[in-house]
Image 1 (cartoon, one colour):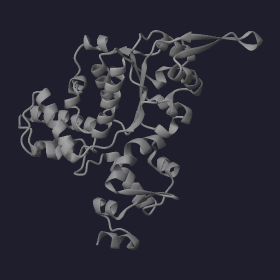
Image 2 (tube, rainbow, N blue to C red):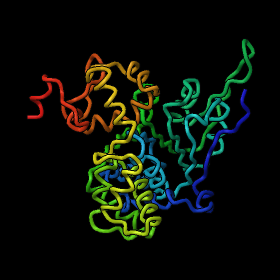
Image 3 (tube, helix red, strand yellow):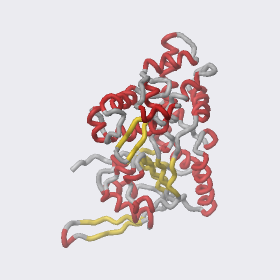
Image 4 (cartoon, one colour):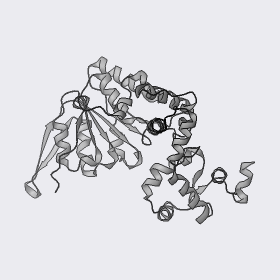
Length: 343
């Protein structure tokens, strides 16, 4: 049995750690957090109401694709409430004792953030239920007929959790997020451009007009991806001795294999395999993963959401299928049954 301790980070301790660029780009004020208007409004009401009653905010679950700002929201909630933020993740909590250690070390009003909560072991989930609902921790001591349960009172705390796969979280656990379950949506290109202008100021880069638009339209509607492309374009401009303009952005992203729609080499390979090997589909996820020598989860979590968003693939009852626009993007002639959709 592993003796490794669960990874828990304290935001106050992190503030004294060496600076990291990604942390600097993370908004530290509500007004700097661009997009997700509905989620922010709901959180603001939840926080203000709890503050007026003198109690910690209720438990909240954030879900949505990676890179949309779930962790940033946890930091902002902690800052807005003036509470201490403890951070861990589902995979780091391997045993019931790990969870017990984390919960019993919380102070009154602390906020616990669990990332990737869908990867919690089911046994650990069941220990979390009474902790969230009643503020108690039930621990079983011993085995067999001599086993007994002791109950520990926990200080009032707020659990913030994030997941990219909300369907993998059991209904009993989801129902205990009494503060709300909020979906984070993809960003618009205008929102991404605003985020890029802010990031450019922080990293001290003069971005020429039009550069942010070229990055935004390739960013997969995701701030994390947009900031990654900005940093790589900055590096390219620095090494080549040029300006960070639209042309530099296009050259740097072409070097990364990113096309004008933001598709990566693995995205295009997936589309090509569907077109060339499976006649455009429908093809099952398992078969497609085997043909690409890729994990099913990678296709589902990384490739598929963006391709669906662009309308390049569609899900059917028999599997994934290419659309007419996918053939058009690949420069291939679509089957006759799809050609009329391009007219």
